[in-house]
Each structure stands twice: as structure tokens, then as C-alpha cells.
Amino acid sequence: MKWLIAFAGACKEEKVRESIPVLRDLTFRSLALYRDLCSVEGVRCDLRNDGTLTVFATPEGLEEGRRDADLLGEYGITTEIWRPGQVTQSEPQINPQIAGGILYPQDAQISPSDFVESLSAVAQSMGTSILASTQVTGFRQEGKTITTVQTTRGEFRPKIVVLAAGADSTRLAGMLGVQLPIEAGKGYSFSVPSDQFGPSRALLLSEAKVAVSPFRGRTRFGGTLELSGLDYTIDAARVIAIRESSNRYLSASLLVNVEEKWTGLRPCTPDGLPIISRIPSVRNLVVASGHAMLGVSLGPISGSLAAQLAQEKQPEFNLDPLSASRFHM
Image (cartoon, rainbow, N blue to C red; front, side, top):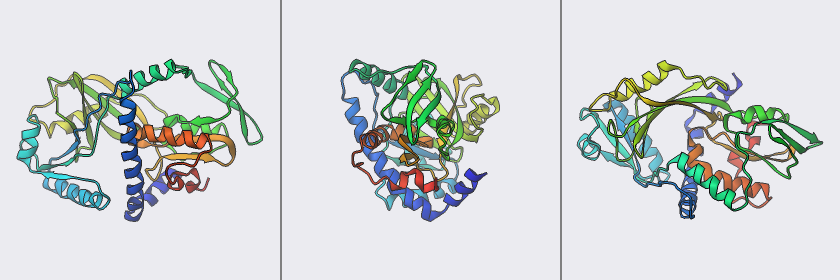
């Protein structure tokens, strides 16, 4: 309930306007870092700079999209308004009865699994130790300092702890007496073969609130946000709802049977901004979490900022808007 009250308080135009330049600057910096990382030998990204096309089923939805585009344009975000014919010329599998589209040409896309797996391999080849399938079970502290991290693979005595555990960050922080206002926002996705539906770029099906991501050989449909706690069970009705609402935008309906049903928990803060911050009550703790739907988008810059905080360097961005203290912790 406290989270929902804080969320309602953040749903104001002034709060949105305060957040836009913060997320804009972080996102563009992150994209630049992606380009650097993708140039490292051995790192596979499949980085594409095709932009994102938002598709609207109704004139009312398109008008609302225009207002959003105008607002973002005030902050330097480029958009292009497309007529229905332009949309279907670019994406022939879209229903010609749609109302129109808005292209965000500055957007880019990667293949997250390829990127993380290859980056992990490169990091380990440079001497980094990565312990996969290892659960943190507890901590020991002396005063304000974490002295031991207890795990299923033994105990570790860290100099600095960076807590970047997504939706599980709240539970782990609680072991240290730290309250993080991060709730798990469950999302669902499924994939279909590209020969069933294969757009040339990422799409957002606006009224349906569904994101469509093309990868090699498959296309992923994802949507919904369910405040369900740390629950990974799949509600089949929600997967079906994504499919049915998506069909409204497509010239041919998706088949009943889909591949790779999946659910994941987005770590959501009440104000939509991540927490990248030191914690005053724990001297050697840095938190980098709460990225909601922007975890992949903001991964590189979040890692860079967390490293700067861990090394007690001056961060390259003003981190006051991302500080844990903004929630009066």
C-alpha cells in the first residue's frame, strides 16, 4: 500500500517532466557504452539501430501518441508521424486498418541473451570470477560494514557489495536492515517463428501495451504488469490476452500454439527511476536496482555508475534523482 501511494504521488505531469531528462541522458549514454562494448572482440550484441515503431489501432490512441511525442520532442527526442500506408509499406504484416504509427528513430535493440552470455565469457577470460547458480543466503555485519556475504557456494569477505539483484533486491536489502521501495512487476512473453510474424524493427502495439521484438529466427511478444510479489508462475490467461490483443494489429492472426512462454519480474520503484546509490546505514553497500522495463536499456550506464560509486570516484552524472534517500530512507 505504501508503494501504491508513492506511485500515485509520482503520476503527475511535473514529476514526469522531472524524470524525462534524467532517463534521456542515461539512455543515450548507455547506448554509447553499448557501441563500445559491442566492439570488444568476443562480445556478441546483434546491435541494431532501426528505431522503434509505435503502432496505433485507433485515432484516439494515435492522438494520445502525438501528445506524448510532442512532450518528448521538448526534450530532444526525435519522432516521425507515419500514415497507415507508410506503416504497412515498412511492415507489410501489419493490419492496413490501423490508424497510423510513430517512429522513434533514435532507439536501438540488442539480443540480451547473446550479449550477457558473451560478455560473461569475455569478462572471465580477463580474470573475473563469476559464480553461476549461486544464492545469497545472508550477511554478517560489524557496525555499519558488511564483513561477510553468505552464499550456497561458501562465504565471501567483500570490500564492496553491489546489490543489483532486480526484483529480489528488496528481500536481500532487508537482511541488512535497509528498506528498498522496489516491487516486482510481473511481465509475460511468448515467441513465434519469424516466418509467422517477422517485423523489420521493434514495435510497440500502443493500446494493447505489447512490445514486439524481432530476433534471429523468432519474434517475441511481451506485455502486462502484474504486482504479484516474487511469483514466477505463469498465468495462461495473461499470455492468451497478449496474443489476442496483438492480433488486432496484425494482418494475419497469430497461431493458437506459441513457443517459449516466459515470465519475468521487473523491479519497479514508485517514481519510475532506478536507484543507483550508496546507502548511508551500510558503509560498503552500493545499490543499482529498480530499473523496471529499462533494465537492458540502462544496464551499461548503471554498471559504470555503480563502479564509480564503489571506487569512491565522482560519478559522471548527478545521482541525486537516483539516490535511495529520495524515498526518505
